[in-house]
Amino acid sequence: MSDSQENKLSTSLNSFKPFTIFSPPQSQIIVPQLIRNPSKFLTSVNKPISTFLKQELNNLLVNLEEKIDAEKTDKIIEKINATNKCKLVSNITLIEHLCYPYQKQPFKLIFHNDIPHPAYKGKCFTLRGNIIDRNNNIVILDEPIQFRAVIYNAEHPIKTIDLTRYNEKIIKGNTVIETLSNIYFRKLMIMEVSSYHPSKMFNLVILADDMNKVEPFVFSKLVVKWTKLNPYEIRKKFKFDEFYNFLGNLK
Image: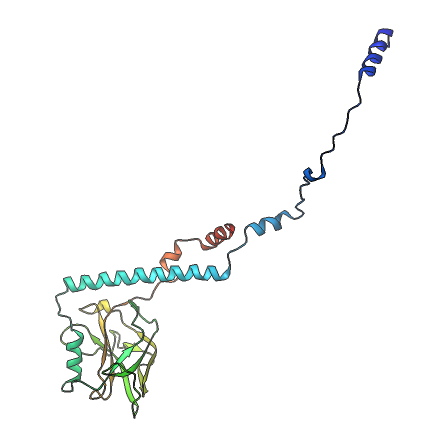
């Protein structure tokens, strides 16, 4: 190395000032936390929705489809009434026909639930009710009476429908009961689609063996369709696992 180069290096070293290390206050030091298991962290973010909420959402969609189905059935009945040439039987006419010559029986029936709207071929439903007097008070009879669930056509002339087109019983299940007060028809099933009949509907009648004592009850405009598709139409349009996970991420 030449003398001139040595002089330059000496000068640069002499002019160098030692630097100072700045230490920020402890409260301002931010130490990032280490995620030791990233997959666990991601799983917690995508935590699935609770079973209860999942069930509630499912019930909401089931109820929504049942409501839509009922509205469709109402439109079918309106169309039948507007275009059908056959004359439909009213409830009063049917009761008078069944009870003649008995009128103004001391007791009648009240039901706490309605028939399905629509009903589906081969799908069970239940009817619950009571025997009441003319003041609508629930009564207990002195002796048990037998009741039957019977299908009638909805148009004139009035007649019972006992068999399907294939000579099968049109109504199955617990179709006959004996009681003093409570009415409970369990697991009733209609085995014929109503669209095959002129009025496209049935009348389901609950008859007492002693019609002099208890007035019949008529469930009119019973529409029976083919067995309901499963899963429901509305639910098929959604990918529920993805939907539930999405809701879970909103928490």
